[in-house]
Length: 205
Image (cartoon, rainbow, N blue to C red; front, side, top):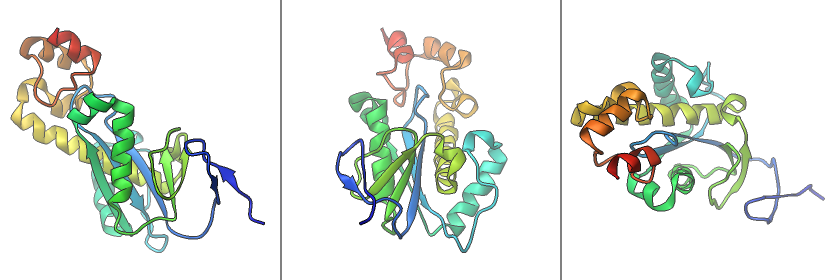
């Protein structure tokens, strides 16, 4: 009889480590004061490997950009999804992050047999899933997902910086730096600021 484990999230018996495609999932943008939270899901091709995968935070912007293009070209399939600022403010950042992850997995062209998610929480999925703490350091598919999510969000910040240059999104990527907080106090919040986050709510109050 095959060994079985129980998912903490769903408390149903699951068969682990069976055959089939494995997707890695990670997010970017939980901490910033503005913009969507982004999640990516990646199924890598074992016959066409991507060299140099690592946690996106440990890579230079230039290296992330190069790996982004290579992952998009070589992976069996990739999906990038967002949860909007409105969803973040309505649901809270954790639930919005899980929603973005769910959308990323659902957006894959191929359905994985198993999903490996960075962290300790799982989105609601209709496939076998496992949460792996520091998975972006341990699992190549999660590392690839972290790179896609980070580059996608950084590009969003660069585009939004062109519309609202007074906030400096291209430099701080939406995080609550001293310069960003000073801009908030001077200019107020823009449409993409997360009003449920205390630094933004404090300025508006």
